[in-house]
Length: 373
Ligand code: COA
Image (cartoon, rainbow, N blue to C red; front, side, top):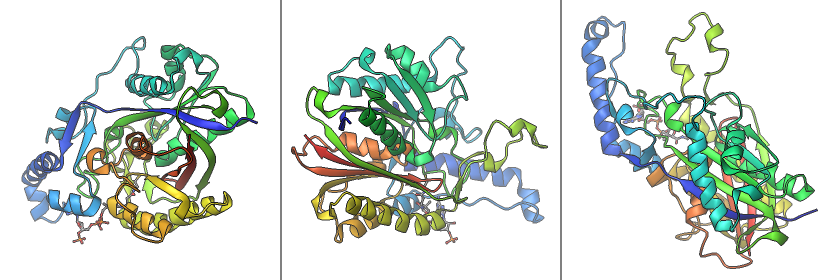
């Protein structure tokens, strides 16, 4: 059995940002337009007037200050409220493959490896640009990698579930060098016209390289252990799918084809699940929270992360102990905890323990205990 290690990480960040103020200005213009266009229906009680959003609410409720997106103009156009992404020809690289390539090359560079040395690619994300061929197989070809590749979807927990799958394959020897890539075009499944959630998501792509500890070229993080868990819930849901055209209303623009959540219930139900999961993972690994130098948590909500940090550590986290990136990136689904890891790991000393944890729809929660070397 080999001991798996994370030897490189990389992040692709889109060029376009949207601040809360920019988002709210365009959302409120949409609301005004909707209320004017539907004034008669609203007065007659047959339609409900939309309420404006506010930057203060967004920051207070979530901690988010801005987000990166693949297309700013489409999202901020009050007549559209949706990104505009070109249809690419079948012989051109897909958008997700391009994002993946950038993040993967950064991870490979950090690990001192080339694409040709990779023999497993897992594309682990909450949505795929197409059903098949797998995005991961396209990335395999673009990188000149060998072996095999597959896509997997576990919503916000995709990256940690992908890391567990890759680490287990490195352990058993069925793969020698694995990339776990999480391209998230969340702007494509967010309902930008719903004030309850229009501020939540952002786009990004992360990649991590996993290989046997004894072949690592430089510094890195041994993957000490991983733990994944799921428990069915409808509180975060997206009903988009390949059977859509078979429904009576066909391709009609239905609200439930975009991201839907009952945020308050998610808060109430997911928090205890995550805290219990992390503490059980630590005790199963004969470790205590006091030995953990850094928590790289899923990046959905600042209050949520503050709560988890306090519950797991048994005290307020020290500055830098539980870094957030959600103020800059918003919720990037599966990529969030990996962006935090990528940005905040360089100062850890050999032997320092850390824990990556993601959670979300399913419900699902995945954690990875790391030891720096
Ligand atoms: N601007 C102004 N007011 C808003 C608003 C906005 N954009 N969106 C909602 N409000 C209002 C609501 O209508 C509500 O008003 P009411 O009290 O008069 O009914 C009030 O603000 C509170 O709304 P609520 O939705 O209960 O806010 P919240 O404090 O629960 O925060 C979330 C909302 C989404 C930030 C929060 O629930 C959350 O982060 N949940 C967990 C989400 C999560 O992790 N999901 C995983 C996704 S992968």
